[in-house]
Image (tube, rainbow, N blue to C red):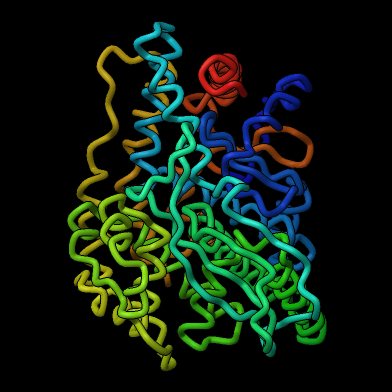
Length: 445
Protein backbone atom coordinates (compact mmCIF):
# COMPACT_ATOMS: atom_id res chain seq x y z
CA UNK A 1 0.00 0.00 0.00
CA UNK A 2 1.35 3.44 -0.95
CA UNK A 3 1.94 5.94 1.84
CA UNK A 4 0.55 8.83 -0.21
CA UNK A 5 -2.47 7.71 -2.19
CA UNK A 6 -4.48 10.05 -4.47
CA UNK A 7 -8.15 9.91 -3.49
CA UNK A 8 -9.63 11.14 -6.75
CA UNK A 9 -11.45 13.88 -4.81
CA UNK A 10 -10.84 17.62 -4.77
CA UNK A 11 -12.44 20.98 -4.12
CA UNK A 12 -13.99 22.76 -7.07
CA UNK A 13 -12.28 25.91 -8.44
CA UNK A 14 -15.00 27.98 -6.77
CA UNK A 15 -14.46 26.22 -3.44
CA UNK A 16 -10.71 26.81 -3.71
CA UNK A 17 -11.35 30.53 -4.14
CA UNK A 18 -13.59 30.47 -1.09
CA UNK A 19 -10.97 28.58 0.90
CA UNK A 20 -8.46 31.40 0.53
CA UNK A 21 -10.72 33.47 2.77
CA UNK A 22 -10.74 30.88 5.57
CA UNK A 23 -7.04 30.70 6.47
CA UNK A 24 -6.31 34.21 7.70
CA UNK A 25 -6.92 33.45 11.40
CA UNK A 26 -4.19 30.81 11.63
CA UNK A 27 -0.40 31.19 11.37
CA UNK A 28 0.68 30.85 7.75
CA UNK A 29 4.27 31.95 7.27
CA UNK A 30 4.54 30.20 3.92
CA UNK A 31 2.24 30.55 0.93
CA UNK A 32 2.84 26.91 -0.01
CA UNK A 33 0.61 25.51 2.73
CA UNK A 34 -2.23 26.24 5.14
CA UNK A 35 -4.48 24.82 7.83
CA UNK A 36 -8.05 26.15 8.13
CA UNK A 37 -9.42 25.40 11.62
CA UNK A 38 -13.12 25.87 10.84
CA UNK A 39 -13.01 23.25 8.08
CA UNK A 40 -9.93 21.42 9.46
CA UNK A 41 -8.60 21.14 5.88
CA UNK A 42 -4.84 20.91 5.37
CA UNK A 43 -3.35 22.17 2.11
CA UNK A 44 0.23 21.48 1.02
CA UNK A 45 0.27 23.36 -2.25
CA UNK A 46 3.86 22.49 -3.12
CA UNK A 47 3.46 18.74 -2.53
CA UNK A 48 4.12 16.84 -5.78
CA UNK A 49 2.63 13.49 -4.93
CA UNK A 50 4.15 11.43 -7.73
CA UNK A 51 7.61 12.90 -7.14
CA UNK A 52 7.42 12.22 -3.41
CA UNK A 53 6.28 8.64 -3.92
CA UNK A 54 9.13 8.05 -6.36
CA UNK A 55 11.59 9.60 -3.91
CA UNK A 56 10.37 7.30 -1.12
CA UNK A 57 10.83 4.30 -3.40
CA UNK A 58 14.35 5.46 -4.26
CA UNK A 59 15.05 6.20 -0.58
CA UNK A 60 16.34 9.65 -1.51
CA UNK A 61 14.12 12.51 -0.32
CA UNK A 62 16.55 15.33 -0.97
CA UNK A 63 14.98 16.23 -4.36
CA UNK A 64 11.60 16.66 -2.61
CA UNK A 65 12.89 18.38 0.52
CA UNK A 66 10.54 21.36 0.23
CA UNK A 67 7.55 19.08 -0.29
CA UNK A 68 8.35 17.15 2.89
CA UNK A 69 9.13 20.28 4.91
CA UNK A 70 5.81 21.96 4.19
CA UNK A 71 3.89 18.71 4.76
CA UNK A 72 5.36 18.35 8.25
CA UNK A 73 4.84 22.06 8.94
CA UNK A 74 1.11 21.97 8.19
CA UNK A 75 0.52 18.58 9.76
CA UNK A 76 2.05 19.94 12.97
CA UNK A 77 -0.64 22.62 12.99
CA UNK A 78 -3.30 19.93 12.50
CA UNK A 79 -1.99 17.72 15.31
CA UNK A 80 -1.61 20.67 17.70
CA UNK A 81 -5.21 21.65 16.98
CA UNK A 82 -6.56 18.20 17.84
CA UNK A 83 -3.97 17.16 20.42
CA UNK A 84 -3.57 20.02 22.94
CA UNK A 85 -5.67 21.53 25.72
CA UNK A 86 -5.64 24.82 23.84
CA UNK A 87 -6.96 23.09 20.72
CA UNK A 88 -9.76 21.36 22.62
CA UNK A 89 -10.97 24.70 23.99
CA UNK A 90 -10.85 26.21 20.50
CA UNK A 91 -12.76 23.26 19.07
CA UNK A 92 -15.50 23.73 21.68
CA UNK A 93 -16.03 27.33 20.57
CA UNK A 94 -16.00 26.37 16.89
CA UNK A 95 -18.70 23.78 17.56
CA UNK A 96 -20.79 26.25 19.52
CA UNK A 97 -20.60 28.64 16.56
CA UNK A 98 -21.73 25.87 14.19
CA UNK A 99 -24.63 25.13 16.54
CA UNK A 100 -25.53 28.84 16.46
CA UNK A 101 -25.33 28.78 12.66
CA UNK A 102 -27.76 25.88 12.61
CA UNK A 103 -30.24 27.59 14.93
CA UNK A 104 -29.88 31.13 13.50
CA UNK A 105 -31.50 32.84 16.46
CA UNK A 106 -30.55 36.16 18.06
CA UNK A 107 -29.94 34.34 21.34
CA UNK A 108 -27.07 32.46 19.66
CA UNK A 109 -25.35 35.52 18.15
CA UNK A 110 -22.81 35.74 21.02
CA UNK A 111 -21.36 32.32 20.08
CA UNK A 112 -20.64 33.60 16.57
CA UNK A 113 -18.99 36.80 17.81
CA UNK A 114 -16.99 34.92 20.44
CA UNK A 115 -15.46 32.70 17.76
CA UNK A 116 -14.65 35.73 15.63
CA UNK A 117 -12.75 37.29 18.54
CA UNK A 118 -11.07 33.99 19.35
CA UNK A 119 -9.90 33.62 15.75
CA UNK A 120 -8.39 37.10 15.90
CA UNK A 121 -6.55 36.27 19.12
CA UNK A 122 -4.64 33.35 17.58
CA UNK A 123 -2.58 35.90 15.69
CA UNK A 124 -2.35 39.30 17.38
CA UNK A 125 -4.46 42.03 15.75
CA UNK A 126 -2.36 44.51 13.79
CA UNK A 127 -3.08 47.35 16.23
CA UNK A 128 -0.82 45.79 18.86
CA UNK A 129 2.12 45.05 16.61
CA UNK A 130 4.31 46.90 14.18
CA UNK A 131 7.52 46.27 12.30
CA UNK A 132 9.93 48.35 10.25
CA UNK A 133 13.03 47.25 8.34
CA UNK A 134 16.10 47.22 10.61
CA UNK A 135 18.81 49.67 9.59
CA UNK A 136 21.43 46.92 9.47
CA UNK A 137 21.51 43.21 8.69
CA UNK A 138 21.29 40.85 11.66
CA UNK A 139 22.05 37.15 12.07
CA UNK A 140 22.69 34.51 14.70
CA UNK A 141 26.12 36.10 15.22
CA UNK A 142 24.60 39.58 15.55
CA UNK A 143 21.08 38.86 16.93
CA UNK A 144 18.29 41.31 17.53
CA UNK A 145 17.99 42.76 21.02
CA UNK A 146 14.74 42.07 22.89
CA UNK A 147 12.92 43.96 25.63
CA UNK A 148 9.54 43.11 27.13
CA UNK A 149 6.44 45.13 27.91
CA UNK A 150 2.94 44.35 29.15
CA UNK A 151 0.17 46.21 27.37
CA UNK A 152 -3.59 45.89 27.67
CA UNK A 153 -6.31 44.94 25.23
CA UNK A 154 -8.77 47.55 23.97
CA UNK A 155 -12.33 46.26 23.95
CA UNK A 156 -14.99 46.98 21.26
CA UNK A 157 -16.09 50.07 23.23
CA UNK A 158 -12.58 51.57 23.30
CA UNK A 159 -11.90 50.75 26.94
CA UNK A 160 -8.47 49.58 28.08
CA UNK A 161 -8.97 46.25 29.81
CA UNK A 162 -6.54 45.65 32.65
CA UNK A 163 -7.99 42.16 33.02
CA UNK A 164 -6.83 41.40 29.46
CA UNK A 165 -3.11 42.17 29.40
CA UNK A 166 -0.92 41.50 26.36
CA UNK A 167 2.65 40.22 26.76
CA UNK A 168 4.80 41.82 24.08
CA UNK A 169 8.40 41.67 22.92
CA UNK A 170 10.16 44.72 21.49
CA UNK A 171 12.86 43.89 18.97
CA UNK A 172 15.79 46.25 18.52
CA UNK A 173 18.95 46.83 16.59
CA UNK A 174 22.23 45.37 17.80
CA UNK A 175 24.05 47.03 19.52
CA UNK A 176 22.03 50.28 19.70
CA UNK A 177 18.81 48.55 20.89
CA UNK A 178 16.83 51.02 18.78
CA UNK A 179 13.36 49.45 18.52
CA UNK A 180 12.16 48.49 15.04
CA UNK A 181 9.33 46.09 15.94
CA UNK A 182 6.83 45.25 18.66
CA UNK A 183 5.16 41.85 18.75
CA UNK A 184 2.71 40.19 21.16
CA UNK A 185 3.74 36.64 22.06
CA UNK A 186 0.55 35.07 20.72
CA UNK A 187 -0.71 31.51 20.57
CA UNK A 188 0.07 31.75 16.86
CA UNK A 189 3.73 32.39 17.70
CA UNK A 190 3.82 29.18 19.75
CA UNK A 191 2.08 27.16 17.05
CA UNK A 192 4.45 28.46 14.42
CA UNK A 193 7.69 27.72 16.27
CA UNK A 194 6.47 24.14 16.65
CA UNK A 195 5.73 23.91 12.94
CA UNK A 196 9.11 25.43 12.08
CA UNK A 197 10.90 22.93 14.33
CA UNK A 198 9.11 20.09 12.53
CA UNK A 199 9.99 21.62 9.18
CA UNK A 200 13.65 21.90 10.14
CA UNK A 201 13.70 18.27 11.25
CA UNK A 202 12.09 17.21 7.98
CA UNK A 203 14.72 19.11 6.01
CA UNK A 204 17.55 17.41 7.88
CA UNK A 205 15.96 13.97 7.39
CA UNK A 206 15.43 14.56 3.68
CA UNK A 207 19.00 15.72 3.17
CA UNK A 208 20.49 12.86 5.18
CA UNK A 209 18.61 10.33 3.05
CA UNK A 210 20.88 11.19 0.10
CA UNK A 211 23.77 8.77 -0.33
CA UNK A 212 26.54 11.16 -1.45
CA UNK A 213 28.22 13.35 1.14
CA UNK A 214 29.13 16.20 -1.23
CA UNK A 215 25.58 17.02 -2.34
CA UNK A 216 24.40 16.54 1.25
CA UNK A 217 26.79 19.22 2.48
CA UNK A 218 25.75 21.64 -0.24
CA UNK A 219 22.04 21.09 0.41
CA UNK A 220 22.46 21.41 4.18
CA UNK A 221 24.23 24.74 3.74
CA UNK A 222 21.41 25.89 1.46
CA UNK A 223 18.74 24.83 3.97
CA UNK A 224 20.60 26.58 6.77
CA UNK A 225 20.67 29.82 4.79
CA UNK A 226 16.96 29.49 3.99
CA UNK A 227 15.88 29.02 7.59
CA UNK A 228 18.15 31.75 8.96
CA UNK A 229 16.89 34.16 6.30
CA UNK A 230 13.31 33.48 7.45
CA UNK A 231 14.31 33.82 11.10
CA UNK A 232 15.71 37.32 10.56
CA UNK A 233 12.98 38.54 8.24
CA UNK A 234 11.40 41.42 10.17
CA UNK A 235 8.06 40.88 8.42
CA UNK A 236 7.82 37.39 9.94
CA UNK A 237 8.57 38.32 13.54
CA UNK A 238 5.31 36.88 14.89
CA UNK A 239 6.27 33.47 13.55
CA UNK A 240 9.82 33.58 14.91
CA UNK A 241 9.32 35.46 18.16
CA UNK A 242 9.38 32.39 20.42
CA UNK A 243 12.68 31.09 19.04
CA UNK A 244 14.29 34.54 19.37
CA UNK A 245 13.09 34.97 22.95
CA UNK A 246 14.53 31.61 23.94
CA UNK A 247 17.75 32.19 22.02
CA UNK A 248 18.48 35.44 23.86
CA UNK A 249 17.51 34.24 27.35
CA UNK A 250 19.06 30.77 27.11
CA UNK A 251 22.06 31.96 25.08
CA UNK A 252 21.47 29.44 22.32
CA UNK A 253 22.79 31.11 19.18
CA UNK A 254 22.12 28.19 16.82
CA UNK A 255 18.69 28.52 15.15
CA UNK A 256 17.89 24.81 14.87
CA UNK A 257 18.59 24.26 18.57
CA UNK A 258 16.60 27.33 19.61
CA UNK A 259 13.62 26.20 17.53
CA UNK A 260 13.64 22.69 19.04
CA UNK A 261 13.79 23.94 22.61
CA UNK A 262 11.16 26.62 21.98
CA UNK A 263 8.91 24.02 20.35
CA UNK A 264 9.05 21.85 23.47
CA UNK A 265 8.22 24.71 25.85
CA UNK A 266 5.49 25.92 23.48
CA UNK A 267 3.92 22.46 23.58
CA UNK A 268 3.95 22.48 27.37
CA UNK A 269 2.41 25.98 27.46
CA UNK A 270 -0.36 24.88 25.08
CA UNK A 271 -1.14 22.00 27.45
CA UNK A 272 -1.12 23.79 30.78
CA UNK A 273 -4.28 23.46 32.87
CA UNK A 274 -5.99 26.13 34.93
CA UNK A 275 -4.32 24.78 38.07
CA UNK A 276 -0.92 24.89 36.32
CA UNK A 277 -1.40 28.60 35.65
CA UNK A 278 -2.30 29.11 39.29
CA UNK A 279 1.04 27.60 40.32
CA UNK A 280 3.15 29.31 37.64
CA UNK A 281 6.07 31.20 39.16
CA UNK A 282 6.32 34.81 38.01
CA UNK A 283 9.92 35.56 37.00
CA UNK A 284 11.65 38.33 38.96
CA UNK A 285 12.20 40.15 35.66
CA UNK A 286 8.41 40.49 35.29
CA UNK A 287 7.95 42.40 38.57
CA UNK A 288 7.56 45.65 36.63
CA UNK A 289 4.31 44.31 35.15
CA UNK A 290 2.68 44.54 38.58
CA UNK A 291 -0.90 43.31 38.83
CA UNK A 292 -0.92 42.37 35.16
CA UNK A 293 1.08 39.28 36.12
CA UNK A 294 -1.93 38.05 38.06
CA UNK A 295 -4.20 38.84 35.12
CA UNK A 296 -1.94 36.93 32.71
CA UNK A 297 -2.23 33.85 34.90
CA UNK A 298 -5.97 34.22 35.39
CA UNK A 299 -6.50 34.47 31.63
CA UNK A 300 -4.23 31.43 31.12
CA UNK A 301 -2.13 33.35 28.62
CA UNK A 302 -0.07 30.73 26.77
CA UNK A 303 2.52 33.16 25.41
CA UNK A 304 3.13 34.58 28.88
CA UNK A 305 3.55 31.07 30.27
CA UNK A 306 6.08 30.24 27.57
CA UNK A 307 8.11 33.36 28.33
CA UNK A 308 7.93 32.73 32.08
CA UNK A 309 9.35 29.23 31.66
CA UNK A 310 12.14 30.57 29.47
CA UNK A 311 13.07 33.25 32.02
CA UNK A 312 12.83 30.86 34.98
CA UNK A 313 14.93 28.23 33.23
CA UNK A 314 18.10 30.28 32.87
CA UNK A 315 20.94 29.43 30.50
CA UNK A 316 21.06 26.35 28.32
CA UNK A 317 23.98 24.15 29.41
CA UNK A 318 24.19 21.55 26.65
CA UNK A 319 21.53 18.95 27.53
CA UNK A 320 18.19 19.55 25.78
CA UNK A 321 16.07 17.29 27.99
CA UNK A 322 17.65 18.69 31.16
CA UNK A 323 16.99 22.26 30.02
CA UNK A 324 13.30 21.60 29.33
CA UNK A 325 12.84 19.90 32.70
CA UNK A 326 14.62 22.77 34.45
CA UNK A 327 12.41 25.39 32.80
CA UNK A 328 9.29 23.55 33.94
CA UNK A 329 10.50 22.71 37.45
CA UNK A 330 11.87 26.22 38.06
CA UNK A 331 8.45 27.57 37.13
CA UNK A 332 6.80 25.53 39.92
CA UNK A 333 5.04 23.33 37.36
CA UNK A 334 6.41 19.91 38.33
CA UNK A 335 7.62 17.90 35.35
CA UNK A 336 6.93 18.01 31.61
CA UNK A 337 5.81 14.39 31.83
CA UNK A 338 3.23 15.24 34.49
CA UNK A 339 1.71 18.03 32.39
CA UNK A 340 1.51 15.88 29.25
CA UNK A 341 0.09 12.87 31.12
CA UNK A 342 -2.62 15.07 32.62
CA UNK A 343 -3.44 16.40 29.15
CA UNK A 344 -3.73 12.87 27.75
CA UNK A 345 -6.17 12.02 30.52
CA UNK A 346 -8.21 15.18 29.95
CA UNK A 347 -8.42 14.65 26.19
CA UNK A 348 -9.39 10.99 26.53
CA UNK A 349 -13.03 12.08 26.43
CA UNK A 350 -14.13 13.20 22.94
CA UNK A 351 -15.85 16.56 22.64
CA UNK A 352 -19.57 15.82 22.60
CA UNK A 353 -22.61 17.89 21.62
CA UNK A 354 -26.01 16.37 22.35
CA UNK A 355 -28.24 16.39 19.28
CA UNK A 356 -25.31 17.48 17.17
CA UNK A 357 -25.37 17.79 13.41
CA UNK A 358 -23.03 16.26 10.84
CA UNK A 359 -20.53 19.08 11.29
CA UNK A 360 -20.24 18.81 15.07
CA UNK A 361 -20.10 15.04 14.60
CA UNK A 362 -16.94 15.57 12.56
CA UNK A 363 -15.32 17.28 15.54
CA UNK A 364 -16.60 14.59 17.92
CA UNK A 365 -15.16 11.82 15.76
CA UNK A 366 -11.78 13.48 15.33
CA UNK A 367 -11.41 14.34 19.03
CA UNK A 368 -11.79 10.63 19.77
CA UNK A 369 -8.18 10.39 18.53
CA UNK A 370 -6.84 13.25 20.67
CA UNK A 371 -5.48 11.06 23.47
CA UNK A 372 -3.58 8.94 20.96
CA UNK A 373 -2.08 12.08 19.43
CA UNK A 374 -0.89 13.34 22.83
CA UNK A 375 0.56 9.98 23.84
CA UNK A 376 2.41 9.67 20.53
CA UNK A 377 3.89 13.17 20.80
CA UNK A 378 5.01 12.52 24.37
CA UNK A 379 7.53 10.04 22.96
CA UNK A 380 8.99 12.35 20.29
CA UNK A 381 12.16 14.37 20.99
CA UNK A 382 10.99 17.84 22.11
CA UNK A 383 7.42 16.72 21.19
CA UNK A 384 8.15 17.53 17.54
CA UNK A 385 6.49 15.68 14.65
CA UNK A 386 8.84 13.98 12.17
CA UNK A 387 8.20 12.52 8.73
CA UNK A 388 8.90 9.06 10.11
CA UNK A 389 6.30 9.40 12.86
CA UNK A 390 3.80 10.85 10.39
CA UNK A 391 3.99 7.90 8.01
CA UNK A 392 4.17 5.21 10.72
CA UNK A 393 2.46 5.50 14.11
CA UNK A 394 0.30 8.52 13.17
CA UNK A 395 -0.51 7.41 9.65
CA UNK A 396 -4.00 6.15 10.50
CA UNK A 397 -4.82 9.38 12.32
CA UNK A 398 -3.42 11.92 9.84
CA UNK A 399 -6.00 13.67 7.64
CA UNK A 400 -6.18 13.75 3.86
CA UNK A 401 -4.55 16.88 2.44
CA UNK A 402 -4.62 18.89 -0.76
CA UNK A 403 -1.52 18.53 -2.94
CA UNK A 404 -0.07 20.72 -5.70
CA UNK A 405 -2.61 19.41 -8.20
CA UNK A 406 -5.51 20.27 -5.89
CA UNK A 407 -6.31 16.61 -5.18
CA UNK A 408 -6.85 15.17 -1.72
CA UNK A 409 -4.08 12.73 -0.78
CA UNK A 410 -4.53 10.05 1.86
CA UNK A 411 -1.87 8.62 4.14
CA UNK A 412 -4.34 5.92 5.12
CA UNK A 413 -6.66 4.66 2.41
CA UNK A 414 -10.32 5.24 3.19
CA UNK A 415 -9.70 8.10 5.66
CA UNK A 416 -11.27 10.66 3.34
CA UNK A 417 -14.66 8.94 3.46
CA UNK A 418 -15.17 9.77 7.13
CA UNK A 419 -13.36 13.11 6.92
CA UNK A 420 -15.56 14.45 4.09
CA UNK A 421 -13.51 17.62 3.46
CA UNK A 422 -15.83 18.98 0.78
CA UNK A 423 -18.74 19.12 3.23
CA UNK A 424 -16.50 20.66 5.90
CA UNK A 425 -15.36 23.33 3.46
CA UNK A 426 -18.94 24.25 2.57
CA UNK A 427 -19.87 24.48 6.25
CA UNK A 428 -16.87 26.70 7.03
CA UNK A 429 -17.69 29.00 4.14
CA UNK A 430 -21.32 29.29 5.26
CA UNK A 431 -20.16 30.09 8.79
CA UNK A 432 -17.84 32.77 7.44
CA UNK A 433 -20.57 34.43 5.37
CA UNK A 434 -23.01 34.35 8.29
CA UNK A 435 -20.36 35.83 10.59
CA UNK A 436 -19.44 38.62 8.19
CA UNK A 437 -23.09 39.59 7.83
CA UNK A 438 -23.57 39.62 11.60
CA UNK A 439 -20.47 41.79 12.05
CA UNK A 440 -21.93 44.49 9.82
CA UNK A 441 -24.63 44.94 12.44
CA UNK A 442 -22.67 44.35 15.65
CA UNK A 443 -19.25 45.81 14.84
CA UNK A 444 -19.81 47.85 11.70
CA UNK A 445 -17.29 45.70 9.83
